[in-house]
Each structure stands twice: as structure tokens, then as C-alpha cells.
Length: 299
Image 1 (cartoon, rainbow, N blue to C red):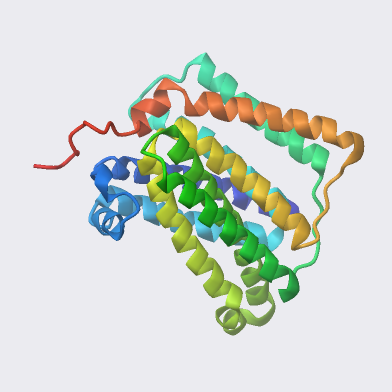
Image 2 (tube, rainbow, N blue to C red; image 1 turned 90 degrees about the horizontal axis):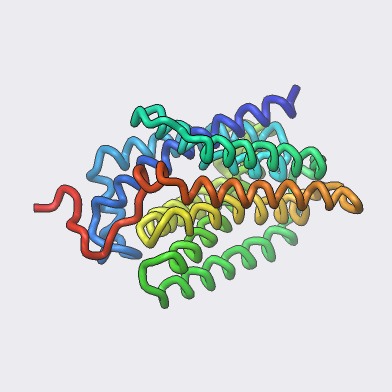
């Protein structure tokens, strides 16, 4: 029963995140490109109702994610977030009254079948609920170092696919670390109540890392096309979360010949995500800003 609840809450979190990305991307298109990687970007977005609606969806997703992580392994919960992009396009089609073509439906099918195949073959099992500090320190340092390197590489590139992909990957690392910290904090709360939750360092850790990841997300959405940032974000989050689940929480996945269907599932996911991110519907909803285009809402 706990495993089923974990999957249900993870799916709800993915759907909420999908809505958040669509709303926040549309808000990001209304601010000047010169505001990228500056505090002014967040200040400007805070004055836009569309972005605030997206932030409310982020909070809903965080609540569902916490419930999912409290009842299931991170190596199951986070890969389900791969469904975020299919949810975003399906919702956009309904909202805009756009007919979803066979290409989109086939790509959605590839993602769903690939995810099911990979998870069924890997069959992740829960590990320890409380990783020791000796494991947390290198995990946090490794994730922080990876984010710094990716952001540094992005800052040396102009707006475009390479910059968007680099920042999207940095967001993925941040999201995965946030999920790991949230899982540990949620366990502390389930064992010791509100007092234990608010005195656990992981609570403040996931809050800080989550805010940083949210800031990077706005820049990923602002840096280039979704076809570059979204696959990096979606697949990177699942991959890093799986690594953290195994190394931090002692979760286990099946290896050996099971690697064959696992790799097949990942290949189907990659193919489906790339097709979805490159679809015309994605472009009509979350098209990247042109450097020469006027800012929406500007005088």
C-alpha cells in the first residue's frame, strides 16, 4: 500500500511541476534577456501573476513530493518526474484547444512505456531511512561542485541550446539533492513530529538548495529552447536521484542481464522526451525568446 501511495503522490507532483514549468516559462518570456543570472530577474518575476501561479503549483508539487518520498524510495519517486513534460504538453493541448497529433501521442507512449520498463526491470528496493553524516558530506560537496562547474560553463556561453542544456543539468542536480534532503527531513518529521522536522539540518538544507534550484530553473527557461533544457533537466534529475538513492540511502536496483531492459527503457524515454520537447506544441507554449524580440508587456 505504501508503494502505491508513493507512486500516486509522485505522479501528482509531476503533474503540478508540469503546470509550474509552463506558467513560469511563459512569465520568463516577458522579461529582458539582460536580466539573466541577476537578482533583478526574480524581483521582476515576483510582480507577474502568471509566475506566482506557477510558484503555487511548485508548492503543491513539493507537498506531494514530500509525501511520495516519505512512503517510497527516492530511486522510484524521482524517475516518475520524467512524466512532467508529457503532462505539460497534454495540459497545454487542453487549455489551448489544440489537437494533439499522432507524433505527440506516440512520444508520450514512448516515455510511459520506457519509464515502466526501466522501473520494472530495476525494481528499486528501499534502503536506510537515515544516511550518516559521513555520507552526506561528500554527496553535498559533489553535487555543489557539479552545479558550480555547470553554471560556470553556462556563463561562458551566449543564450542558446548549449547554455540552456548546461543550466538545465545544474537544475537537475539541485532538484535531486533537494529530494534527498527532503526525504531525510520528512523521515525526521514522521519520527519526532514538527519539532524534529524543524530542528533537522536537512530541513534547512533542502529549503536552501530548493531556492537555489528554483533560481537556476528560471535562468534555464530564460537561456534557450526547451528542447535543450528540458531533456537535460528531466533525465538528469532521474539519473542523479538514482545515484543518491544507491549511495546515500542504500537502495538497490537489479543488475546483470536486467541492464538490458533497463537500457532499453532509458532509450525509449530519451527518444520520447526529445520528440516531445521538439514538438510544435511545445514551441507554441514555451517557445524560447528571440534576442531581437520586444519584451512582452514592455512600453
